Length: 273
Image 1 (cartoon, rainbow, N blue to C red):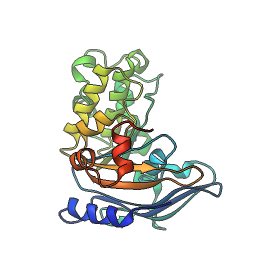
Image 2: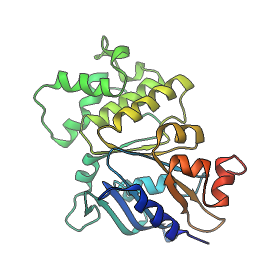
Image 3: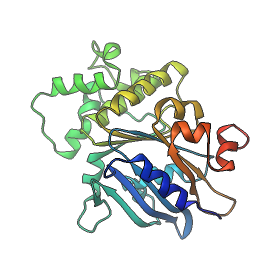
């Protein structure tokens, strides 16, 4: 297995002006002793969108979960390496994983609003679970739903069940719920995979708008989506029986138009995967 760490490091240095907002250093992951992710080194500049692409089973979703310690919820998970958030390792012995997840939010592939709660209650649910107080709940609800590009569609039915929303609306409600905690980083694991084209366009517009105030990392199997929304892209791959790793990492325009590795070129042009 060839892991082009030299290429990753050189490209990353060109991407950044100063310190990374979030950085993965030599991340390796095992589940029940099986090595699933090898030597991942990526940097995420502040107010940027990074796309993680690659075939199914190459470790993209596993990796994104290491960025907020979510993978630790899986029995048998082990990790080596560091994830630096604002220069501090989130795996440090004194770091509470719950506090990490308040600053680094996650939106999953399948929308998961609380169906027995109203739209309004869903937005506020993370705050209540974390014990955070807010002066003006109504103002916060409107702000978060507006930032998630959902306000015109739900402003007159905030006390309706979240289950009454369409799939695309539910996904944007989940984004609004994450925004209520005021995270600095938002992780998104294939947030549009189950959505129609119209809902996908709205989510993509939301991602670009959010990147003006936070750092976004998105896993996607849609090559056009990666090109539309991201500033930089990492291409993951896993040979049979081997752990996943990063083949190439760089500015999105360059990675798609003039990749350094022939495997990247084959993948982004649909020749495999």
